[in-house]
Image (cartoon, rainbow, N blue to C red):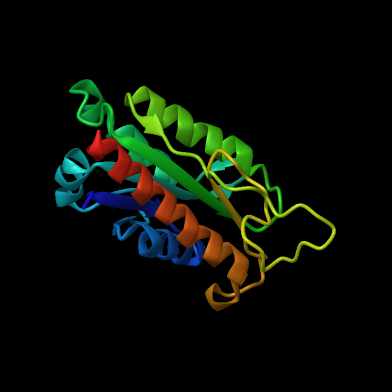
Length: 185
C-alpha cells in the first residue's frame, strides 16, 4: 500500500473536513498546518518518505492562505535536496463562493508541486454540468486540475454539501489509484 499524506491548512474547519474526506478516500494520513503556518517536526520526515502528497488550502482573497504559503516557503530545504522529486502531488481548495478564484489557488499548488519535481494528479472525473445536475452530484463545481469545493460563508462545518464530500472521497481514491499504478511499474 502506498504512503499518502494530506497536508492542509484550515482557518474555520471547512477545509479540514474536506481534507478528512480526501484522506478517507485515499487511506491517507493528515498533517495539519497550524495557525502560525507550521507543521509538526516529524511531518518533514513523513513527507520525505511519502509516495503521494495532497495539498489543501482555503482560497482567501484569490490565493492560498498565508499559513499554507508559510509551509510552502519552509519546504525550501526539501526543494534544495530534491526530497520530493517524482512524488505524486494533488491538491484541493475550498472557498465560500462557487468560483471564488479557486483556479488561482490551484495554479499555485500545481506550480509548487512542479517546483519540487512532482507529478500532478488531476480530478479524472467529469463535471456534473447538465440541466439535471444537483448540488449533491459528484464534481458539481466542475474542476479538473484538482478538487474545488464550496461552502457558504455562513455555513457550519456540518453544512458542507454532501456532493463536495463525496467528490473529495472520490478524489482521494483517484490519488490512491495513481500511487498504486506508479508503484506497480
